[in-house]
Length: 126
Image (tube, rainbow, N blue to C red; front, side, top):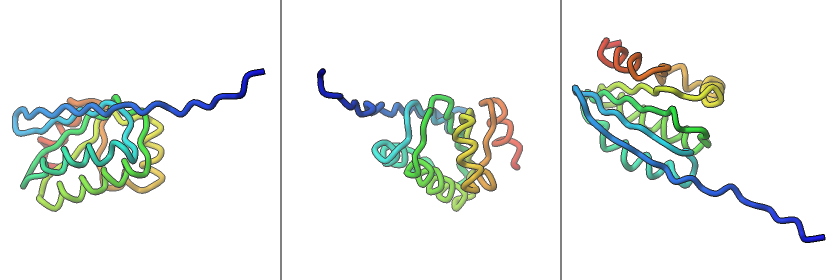
C-alpha cells in the first residue's frame, strides 16, 4: 500500500484591478486574502486613500479571507476615513459577512450586494 500523501492547498495568486471612473476608485479583487496576499493588496490599496476619496472594493471573487485580510480591511478603512473618504465593500460572500459580523466589522464598514448599490451609497454622502 503506497504511503498516504498530503497535499497542501495550492496558493491562488491575487489579481487586483484598479480603475477610476467618475471620481470613484473601483478595486476588483480576485483570489484569497491571507497572510501571503494581504500585504500585496494593502500595498496597492492604501496609496488610493487620498483626501475625500471614494473607494468601491468589489469582493465577489474573494472566496476566503484570513485574519490578515481582516487586518488589511481595518487598516484600509482607517486610512480612508482619516482622510474624510468613503469605502464600500461589494459582493462579500455570506461566510465573510458572518465573520465580519462576529468581529464587529459590519458596525463600521459598509457592504452592499451590487456595484450599483455601492456607487449610490458613495454618491449619497451617507
